[in-house]
Amino acid sequence: MKYIMTLLILVLFSCQNDIKTKASLANETSNEEDFELEIYDFDGLEPFLTKKDNKTYVVNFWATWCAPCIKEMPHFEKLNTNYKHKNVEVLLVSLDFPFNYEKKLKPFIKKHKLQSKVIALDDPDMNTWIPKIDKNWDGTIPVTIIYNKSKRIFYNQTFTYNQLEEELQKFLN
Image 1 (tube, helix red, strand yellow):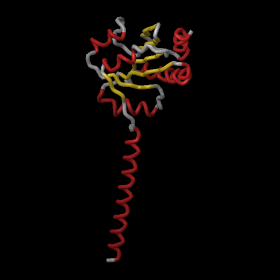
Image 2 (tube, one colour):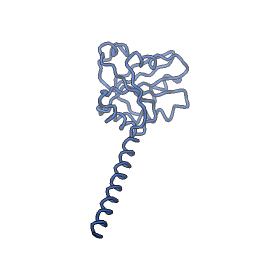
Image 3 (tube, helix red, strand yellow):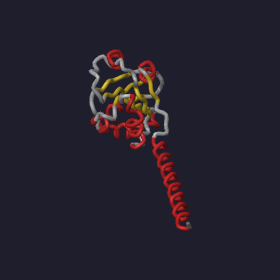
Image 4 (tube, helix red, strand yellow):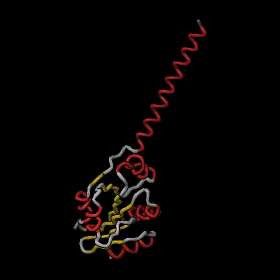
């Protein structure tokens, strides 16, 4: 009887430890995506593309499934870090599919510690909103818009950091 009691106590304690471990793991994974992702349709996005204040805006359209987008992402982050105190704002507009927000987009933002503002565009009517961004845009990504109250340029290309900074300088000088 003594052995059975000892075995029962051991099993009970090991189960409690297992429960605590599972709870701890659940908390760790839920904290990975513990921020609220801003999601807009085109009408909600449009004000981000037409501001008339004293800032210069760098707006990059990208997705986690786009290899060239991911390759150039560090350049936008570096630009954000180097110019955020110089009246420049970087906005990263994700075109990821809504079903990937939780399992791909939010973990990507967290893993890469993105400091630029990230929003998701969820508007399936691409034929309507793509020409509103730029009449020459064919829908491929990455694309970037740099604008301020007096100038706007659409770039259908990928950037190195030096190219991106060079284009930004045209708006700051």
